[in-house]
Length: 120
Image (cartoon, rainbow, N blue to C red; front, side, top):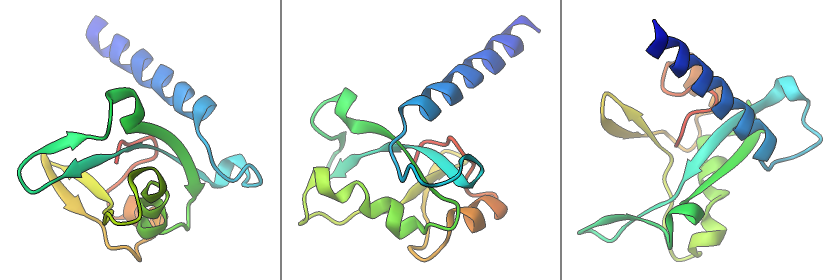
């Protein structure tokens, strides 16, 4: 169908955008990279809001496939401040689940929790 084709093209364009703009260890081989869109949210107990403004809330990064969820989460702790706790959340059936800090990206993908190019 026409909508299905547009979605596939849109997904391909998003994939290329993330690959072209992602920051990470440039020494990693392309096949060893795991690309993610990182979305920073702040929860003050009452409201969940994106940090500062919408454009600053999202960033593209790549990590080694053996990097842990904790390493990914700590990569955004600098911009939000050291006094904030950071968690790695994935969306599953419209609910958010916290990945264990010691789980590797590869293991999370194998378990079906995460796919490359996901927003976390």
